[in-house]
Every structure is written in structure tokens, then in C-alpha cells.
Image (cartoon, rainbow, N blue to C red):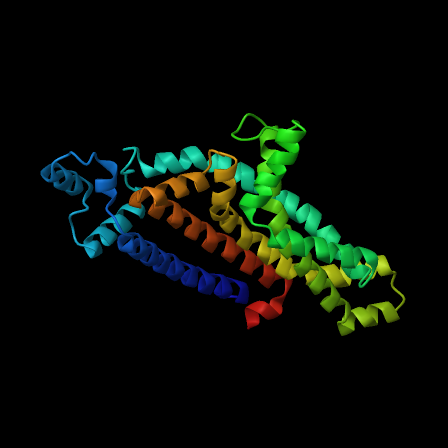
Length: 309
């Protein structure tokens, strides 16, 4: 077994363990929440005997440990259960909302990296210059902005005052612009700072100094010797940010009434719809493991020292 295969198998085993731990944690948290999902759903005038009958139908009358293993066994076969509040299967609800969330997060992460990497590169090349200092100030401001506040601000400027973009919901490509920028701008600050710091560190490496001493052009040194090493953490961060953007879009989707999975998760939490919340968090956990594995493999290919460690 070569190094990269052994490295992949090791990371895959760790990922499976992480998913199992996540399922235990989310199940425990949902069980510990105050209130009762069935009692919140039914009319207060419904007899207690009927409430107990509904709980038995949903399997909520069994001990939590039995409920967990029953749920875990079902999701391994692709059955995420049935929503307590709507009566629809969780798989159907997720598949119905997932395309909208992927659309939003895909455009958001594209904006994020297309802006952050070039800006971080330019800021590092002109370190301590006017562009570098002003960019750092802007990025700190963006990083400090709460998502809901930024979304409302963009909504007021471009939808209410200027009237050039839709205010909420999904009605075509134009509807993507405001929520995508709301999702991308705060995260862009992190990628900008990471790119800038990694490029600055790479410029101080001895092999870069050697390349400069050999008379290579600044452009060739920057592309061939600096960016290759500097972009390894940025590449890993790209894959790690994908699943968390899906989960992190809850606020953005709520602000813009976006019909995605984040809004579904928020509704599930507020109504204590256990199957919906557990199903979505499980999907996010699996996506995290997959993206983490891809990021680790790519970083191992780019830098063999990583897999040897």
C-alpha cells in the first residue's frame, strides 16, 4: 500500500468515526431540548390518550437509546424518517430544498474565492502599501458584520432604495445576487487574510530566495515557487468551507426567504422536528467528511510532507 492510499484509508476511518460521534451528539441535543414535539404540534384540546397514540406511531414512546439505533439503522439504508410536522419523508424535503442551497452556496463560494485570492495576492506583493492597509481595514469590517445585518443593509440599498434587485424569494438569476454576496463577503475576509499571510510566508522560504538569486523573473517566481505552496491551505479551506456554507446559510436564507435547506433546518429546530434536524445535520456531517477527505488528499499530493507526517 503506497503512502497516498494509506493516508486516504486513515482519513476515511477517522471520517466515519466523526460522523458516528456527530449523530450521537445531535441526537442527544435534540432529546435534551425542553418541550415535546408532538404536544407542540397537536391542539391542546386533544386528549392525552391521542397524544400518546401519536407518540407510539412515531416511535417516540421508546427509550432514547432504542430510538437512536433505530434511526441510525434507517439512515444507513437511505431512510431519514418522516417529518413530524408535515408528514412528508425527510429525504423528499431535503432533495426538494438541496438544489436551492447548492445554487446559493455555489455562487457564494465562487464570488468569495474569485475576489479574495487576487486581492490577498496583490496585498501581499505590496505589503504595507496603501492597498494593503485599506484592504485589511475593509476585510476586518466585513468579517465583523453579522450576516443578518449585512443582508438587511444590502436589501435596503439595492432593493428598497434603488429597486434594481429582488428583495426576497427566488424568481430567477437576479434573486441570487443579494443572498450570495451576503453569504460571501464575511467569509471572503478570512480567505483574503489566509492568502495574504501564506504568500508572505512563502516569499521568505529559502527556495524562493534561491530562485530570485538565479535571475528568474518576479512573475515566474510568484507563480511557480510562491503560489504553489501558499495555496495549499487555501485549497484545503475551500473544500472544508463547502459543507459549512450549507449549514451557515440558515441566517441568510431566513433573511431573504430563500427556499433552501438552511431555512428547513431552522424550521425543524424551532418546531422540534427531530427527524428533519437529524437528517440535515447528518447530510452536513457526511459532506464535511467527504470534503475534508478530498482536501487532505489534494494537500497530500501537493505537499508529500503532509502524508509522511
